[in-house]
Length: 235
Length: 246
Image (cartoon, each protein chain N blue to C red):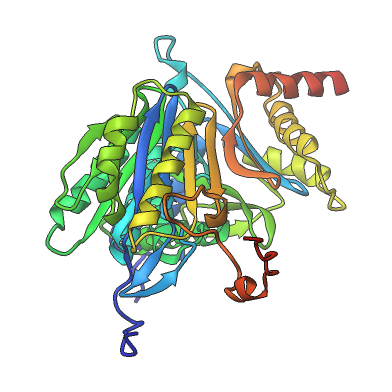
């Protein structure tokens, strides 16, 4: 164990984040681990942040950088909404994020997924990775845990899913990534956005299904020692 | 040896006259009255309501684009009485200021803080020769987290006060007389009573019954603190309730 680990190291969100469109809206999903080096600074973080009533963003990379970018864009979108007199579109939110990410690429280290619903285009997902590219996609994944999900999505993604299918896909995917990526963990949070509004859901770690070789969650290994001994077999 | 009238410039820019008056500021107040619109604001127990006339002088104008009632943030509204162009620039600056406040300090700009900012800006115009005062009286409304419903009025002189009820525009004085009678003994109006007091004050002072399309109504309520401009249907309901009551 590294006794010299620096608990004041920059907080980074080794993360798994996902954004998926479905027939009628979008589902955003994320894990909840924020780490400083090997220490888990926050095991129940909220990585899906609200920008407006109808647009949310999944944050990955540097916690500080992604928080500031979100704060600035929320501020700009608020003014834009008041002046426009109607809700901002997902495209505008994504573009504002992209402009900040691109113009400050030397100083920022954050990958973001913008997802939301507006009356013109319906549900949309935009991926904005490290350098400030803007790509509109039917689904996208990000963060360190996403490396383990490319093959999974190639096989499991399909066009025109229902809301429940999409959410189950997202929860399963985050759960798989948490199982394999040390920098992702904690709980799974999802945010569903459609014409009716926004629904936030929460899946605690012990409610997720176990994958190959994972142990059952238990309070203490003393439970094993205190378990009653089985009857000896009669050979 | 005293000079009679300060070289005659005391009427042209905002410097004092020998009697201690600022003529430009007084002319600004006259500009507010000259616009020909009257506005009313009433504060109830848990809501605030502002009402103004919607005069569309030209038949060719698109009625939906004529407004004096502006959202500043989700929670703050501003009713501008007087010169429309001056009103728009004031609203634009107020919106920027309130949004920056929220971003910088992390909480919503309170009603009195915004009103003070508007009043301070107006005061600067009364001292600088290069800028004239704005010909606008601004009524700011919102629900304060600690103090509840708030109604503030800011004028070209740089004054701002909180009000239980107030008025601005051409029939300001008559409206204030009417409201003083209604607000005697500090009644704690419900939301419906607040709106109806405001609308009936305007009707009484202008001596005409309105159609829903001839007035603009803005409200904030404690149970739903977002600033809301009432639709024509909602205004109609209140007008019907008033005429049934009388």
